Image (cartoon, rainbow, N blue to C red):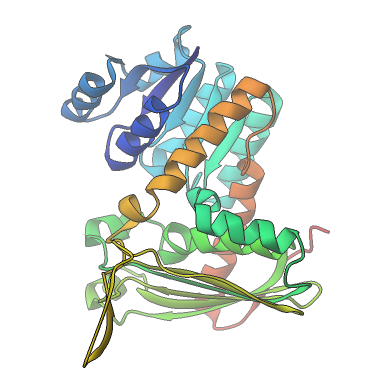
Length: 332
């Protein structure tokens, strides 16, 4: 029996708790949240005890913790969990500072505990199938990757102000996906952006419309398109062009029903937001983490993946600020 503690009982904490509850041989033992009402609500659904975060981490009846708290709490929780010898599943970003992520990685490595960074899009059935076909060589050598990620509406300004900016909050998923698909580390980053959706986002020091270009040492290119507004729903698409063809993963719609009439073809809207769109990915992500713990193998993506994505996000932010591309050290 694997025994879990959920730290953070908000929206994403509830998602991970629901996913874990569907895995046989897993029990959610304890939950914690700064908001008592949220903690008690999730405890009632899962049969867990409500404890404070420190008690969950220190508990002898907890094998692994799932960190779903605000990003600025991750650093201390990761260090505490590592010292306690707990396996760790941490939502992205690990931290808003690459230096602090590196410190977390050092602590995790020293403790020898398993760690999964919550880049759930790697586990989306469509995106994962596309990546497998890339690795199988279906389209030959990769030349150009295009990632489109656009939200239906911007989050509240209060969220924007503590998010670390669009590159560290939103684009970081695409930056990880770029690494996942390219199978090479980007060494050059150029970013541009503007506040076109809501002037208040610009006033908060962020942008809501952005494009990022990544280049690898061998010349492979990835183009990322982000927006905080998509009037047609949650837009999540991938296209990879290679020497022998192209692979594409399109949007997921509410239904597959299509109507044809005199005015043309119409389809159902896309899934409304990330909770619906990536429900299967969240289930697969949690199942992977728990299976890795059972088999004693490192889960992936690990904390090093979180660190590399964070460095790319930092580089994008620097590029936007300076208007110039940022050259990165080639890890190869």
